[in-house]
Image (cartoon, rainbow, N blue to C red; front, side):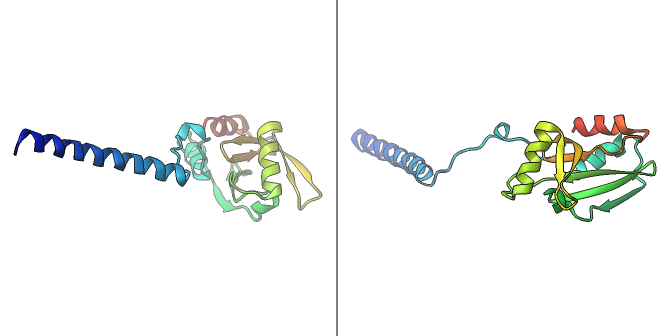
Length: 155
C-alpha cells in the first residue's frame, strides 16, 4: 500500500470516529440525556438499614410488625419494633411522590421535626428525619431512647 493510500485510510478512520462521537453527543442532547452524579441527590435509606444498625448495636428487637396504615402520614411503608416492651416506629417516604400529604410531611419533618397525622384530626407528631426515613419520637420514657435516636441519626 502506498503512502498516499495509508494517509487516506487514516483520514477516513479519523472522520468515522469523529462522526460517531458527534452523533452520540447530538443524540444525548436531543434526548436530554445527562449524567447524574450520586452526590447531586440525597442517598435514600431503607428501613432495614435502621433495623440492622439497631441489632449491630446490641439492641434487641423483641417483635417486628408492619405499620397498619403508613399512608395516614403520607409514607410508603412503616415498621413498628417492640424494644424493651415499648414500640418504636420508623417510616419510609417516597421522595418522588407528588401526593400533597407526603410532600408536606417530608418538608415539615426535615425542617421542623414534625409531621401531621391527617386521619386523626391532624394530630402533630414529633419526628426525626434522615434521608427519606422518619423516626417517630413518642417513646419519651424508653430506657434506650437516646441510643435509638443516635443510631437513627448516624445512618
